[in-house]
Amino acid sequence: MIIAITDESGGIEKSILAGRLAASRALAGRKVLLLDADPRQGAMAQAKNMHDMAMHGSPTRPRLMARAISAKGLQPELEHLVTCYHDIVIDSEGRDSMGSRSALIAARVLVVPPNGVVDGAAQAGLARRIAYARSINPELRVLLATDTQAAPAHALAAQIPLARVVSLGQLYCAVFNLPR
Image (cartoon, rainbow, N blue to C red; front, side):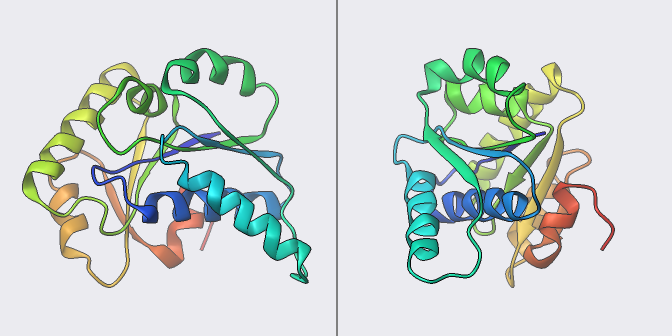
């Protein structure tokens, strides 16, 4: 399964969420690759932090592979990597780019982190990107994660057909279609 994490702001929440989803899935016994397709490489920093915590006494250490990838290399590389891993989590670039579009087109699930898209212009831009991706990948599920500030997520959901707003506590089950 390919899961893309994106927003319009490119904030650290996106990278944290990508790292946590990948680590949770790896702890569940899956072979997982965390791909950092954002030039800021926040997901790589998250993977390094998880590795460092495991080395310093954390009882659980997810078996998680992580690597940075350029936007140009994303699409051809995904075709190869999908046969090597159970799950691939992509920390996609926040802005509209070739790499971001490639991630959305390849993904089965798109997750937008809380507070990732708050203003109207950003919401409209992300809604257009998702509509484009769905014109090629009509099966793309869109999950808008929310914490205590649910209003921006619901406003964005109104612009994206079949988008679902989920709390952070329910996100893992929603992404992987597991019973709560």
